[in-house]
Image (cartoon, rainbow, N blue to C red; front, side):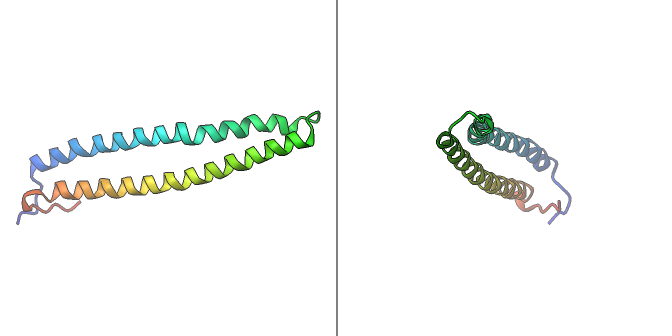
Length: 109
């Protein structure tokens, strides 16, 4: 078994990994823009209301509930994002390993 990388396999690995990485980054960008921006905008909108002394306490309490709900959504999203990043990392490493071991050629990375 050869320990030197096969040029064709290395080229395939170079072609494959960037496309998978770009795909993952695009999905992560979508997740951030849709799952993070909404709750963050809600919190940002509530802050001036909470700071306004002319706003009734009952309305401030409604805003505070909105802030708490939004914070919970952000917390959930950060956990989901962490799982996504770890899963993507693991999948990219596994894919790279499969490509580098094609045709019985073992390449140390």
